Structure formats: C-alpha cells, structure tokens
Image (cartoon, rainbow, N blue to C red; front, top):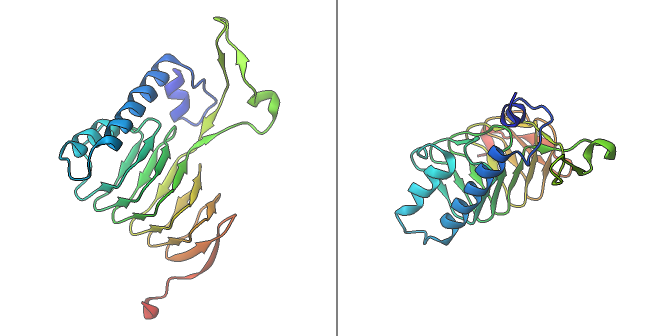
Length: 197
C-alpha cells in the first residue's frame, strides 16, 4: 500500500511521504490564495474548487480564513456555511452535510497519534530526515447541524442530523440526531423539541 492508501484506510502512515507532502503544500498555498481574496471576488469559488478537488455544492460559503490539510478529502453539502478561522485537517474523509452552520474558530481534526511515546515520537529515516507515524479517523457532520463557535471535533466522530453543538465543546464521541450537546467532553444536554421552536 502507498502511504496515501494507508492514510485513507486508517492505518499508521508516514506523513512525510513525498506524494502527501506535495498535496499538503499545494493545498496550503491554495488556502492562502483563498484567504487573500476579497469576499466579493468571483475567483474565490474557483480557488475553493481547486482546494476541494471538485466544484463546491450550490450555496456553500466559507467566510475565511480557511485552513485545509488536503482539501480533496472533504465534501461539503449545499447551502452550508463556515465562519472565520475554519480548520479542517482532513487526513481521513470529512463529510459535511447540507445546511450545516459552522461558527468561528471551529476545528475538524481527523489525525490521531499513538498514545505510547515509543510509537509517537519522531524518528530518523534512512535518508536522515525526521518523521513520525500517525493515523486518521473520518468525521461526519450530517445535514442541518449547527456547530457553534470554538468547537473542536475529533477523529472518528459522527454528529447526527439536526443536532446543535454548543460553543466551546470538544466532541470526542458520536452525537445522536436532533439533540443539543455541550461541554468538554461534549455530552447530550437535551432533545431539540419541535414544540419549542
């Protein structure tokens, strides 16, 4: 398997691999380009298409600045919005549904590192360069969710349709659909009740 195949399969991989490093570098440059464009600049959509590797779905708006690791591993549904400082470390697939509202300073983080330092620490490759090993877990945010400001979503998590994640939460496990969840670690507080809308 290539390092990219290992990464997408959730296995330990070497992030210093030339193919992966090249894609990250290209994506980071495109993010800088996107962030330098005025909000009214029509080139923003083209740049976002280059970052994601596909044309953005209808009505997707990312305020900027944005920060993607690969971009091509992220899919965003129609009419979804992200506010300032949207960070997506998409070493594994990231799926964001339609009509998802994302507040400022939200981080979506798929990379994982071994807990034991013996596997986590940097090591020297035969060519003398340093690297480490990591793995990644996918993240899914289903349709109609609201992710409030300063939320961190960790790898391996699914947030169910229609749920609200309160400001400052750290999401470390799945959240069911149709609930309000808050805290660090994020826990279900209550159901989103139709009669209280």
